[in-house]
Length: 183
Image (cartoon, rainbow, N blue to C red; front, side, top):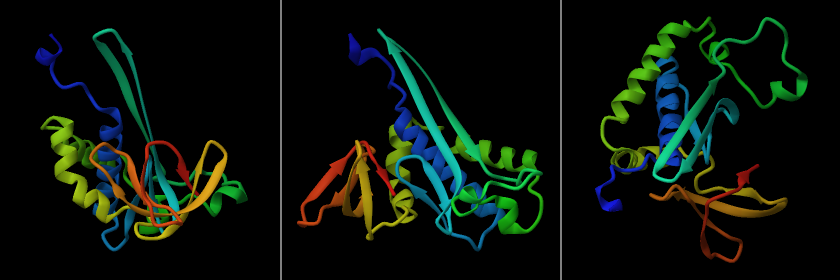
């Protein structure tokens, strides 16, 4: 019976693809900048966060509902950011040194998302995975991975087709992680 159901939406793949679409859209506004994906859900430029993505879904029986929230720092607020955020966050307007036209950015981003989601998300994800991995933040570098309060140095290798992150631990063992945060 389940084989007759259409492909279930994979929100994790959709979130990563949406992050890639954000990076591509930002690149259209600032072509000389490198926008990178920080696994699993951020977009960075110059090591600072420009976008965060949250994907959630609820499955009840045969029904699945979900949402993907995309928060992008386009134009700075009228009041100054707290000092602890100025080292961590950046606005697109700071990069291009002019106010970002929100409607134009939104149109460009939504067109990019529609374009990538024409095929089932698993096919779009597989097609984009080499490009996604080419802009993976700290790829090939040692980074501290925190899982449930425990931290260890690991080398970031790439995002796999199942959305897990391939890493190499300090002993040279290749591992896959599905949860955690790189600091």
